[in-house]
Length: 304
Image 1 (cartoon, one colour):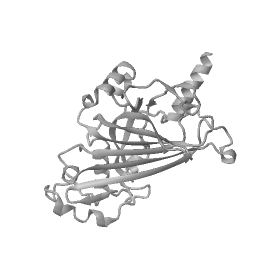
Image 2: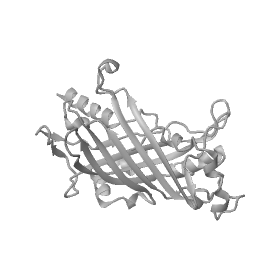
Image 3: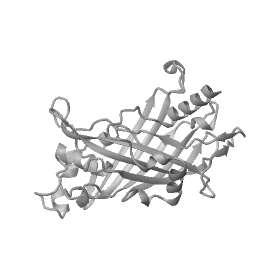
Image 4: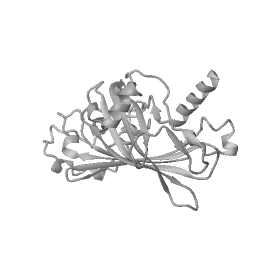
C-alpha cells in the first residue's frame, strides 16, 4: 500500500476554489485553525492525515478486502481475502529555502487469506497450473517517503491541499500509475517487455473541523485502496496472460492494539518488527513485493 510519493501527492495540485468555504464550515475560529489554502497548512494537513504533527509518534493504518484474478475469456475469480497494516511515524525536516516539512518512514505487511475460512494461507494450489506453490505474504520493510516541503527549491509555493471539501467533510483521491524496471525482468526490458506495470488507487476521507484544528496532532480517517498489477511472482504463472486486482478499505487506528486478533497474532508470532515503525533516520532502499521475492529466492539459491 505504501508509495514513497503519496504524502507529496496528497499535499499538491488542488484548485483554489475547493478550499474557499473552509471558514464557514469549521467550528474552530479563523484565527486558530489550520489554513488549508497556504503551503504550510497543506503540509500540516497532509502530515496529520498520513501520520502526526508530533515527531516520532507511531501511527497504524489497517485495511482488508479481496483479491481477484482477471483472465481474458473467463470470469474474474476471488482468489484470496486480504488483510494488511502499515505502521509509520514522521519527523520534522527544515530547509532554508523550502521551509519546514517532514519525512515519513513506515513498514507494511499484508496476509493472503482463504476466501471461505479467513485463515492465513501459506500454500496455494494454482488453479491454472495445478501446481502447489508457497505463498509469500507482503513483507515490505521499509516503505519510506522522501522529504515533503511547502516550497520548491526556488522558494516558490509547491504544496496545496489536494482534495474536496463539502460541509464538515473532506476527501482525497490519489491515482499512482507505475511502470518501471522490474528487478525480476532482466536487463533488456525496453526491448522485450517484462517491466513492472501496476496502478495504486487511494481514497482518504475524514472530518474537516478535525483536520483544521491545531490542537489535534493527528486525525482519524478512513482509507480505500485498490491495486491492479501483473500476476504476483510467487504464483509461478510462467508468462500466462492475466492480472490481479485488490479492492480494500480500512482506517487509521487510535492504537496499534486495535488491530484485529488475526493481525496481532501474526505479528507477534511471525513478523515481530511490525509492532513499531522504522527509525526516522532510516536510509535503506524501499522494499516491494518484487524486491522481497527476489531477495528470498536469491538467499535460498545461495544456501543451495
